[in-house]
Figure: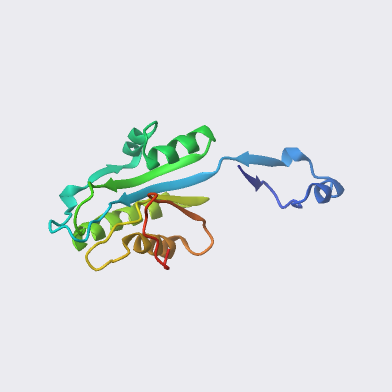
Length: 174
């Protein structure tokens, strides 16, 4: 939960008491998180590239179809719902493990994800559902590129959390 002041009141309880401030002057506001992601396990030795058509894409409220499933996005959705967190779904794309993701496919999905995240702001944090082994043409650490571009939009202060597969390849940029 996030506490927001209605007026300029001292932050500590003792300071509020000495200033004559009442607890009724504070209201509780639900935490607001934005979620989305691009998930792919790339096999760099596979000769067949992963195209945009290879991805299943869910947008906005379509992401709620993953709630209650044995999927990392389902875990994010369920945990936020159980805790009363206001979760704003943006875009989630995933494809069957296969070869290198074509540059055009990666950039198209990432551009849409970034546009939707930016439109969903302001927020208290970002939750990205990624894999940790995606390689796209021109992006040997595609997940790091996703995080870097999200960070460029939201700035250095807003928390970003990332879910990854258990055998993710985490590079120094992550």
